[in-house]
Length: 199
Image (cartoon, rainbow, N blue to C red):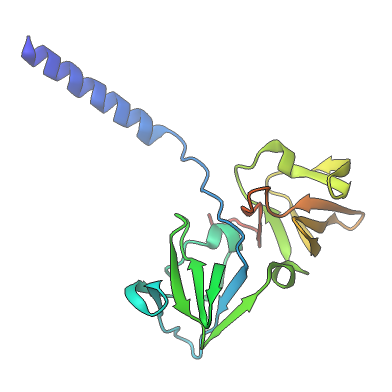
């Protein structure tokens, strides 16, 4: 009897693990927009690793190289540059979100670092909505949250003209200008840059 129960439990465990493996992966958790985007510059062809700390200058957590960021799903192909979301500042130190799991660490921003507020970073760039959003965020408006124009598709790109609070004025084609939310009510990002094909 106990052998049958063991075999039954083993079969159930295998069936459950197979269904989990075969299921589509859930959308990635969208990061908070924070205070802007950190651009890390390389002084040569080979970028030196950026040191990550638990607190400014204390408890080194690891390092970040040009090929080890998980932010391509937000910023598209970064061409060897590192682009990170900055969530806080303490003197010359910036707290950044450095991977797609939302982990954060502090970096020393004295060298090779530019912090760009979102309005400067997004203005003039090709943008796109991040995957897995609720239907309401695909809506394009004539004015922020007033007079719906049309809905964008999940793969449609647009040019960002300017930001105003949580809204972005965008141009999805040469004949249309409207407003989209670029971050939600909780401050999480709704849009990224580039084509987003490398996810």
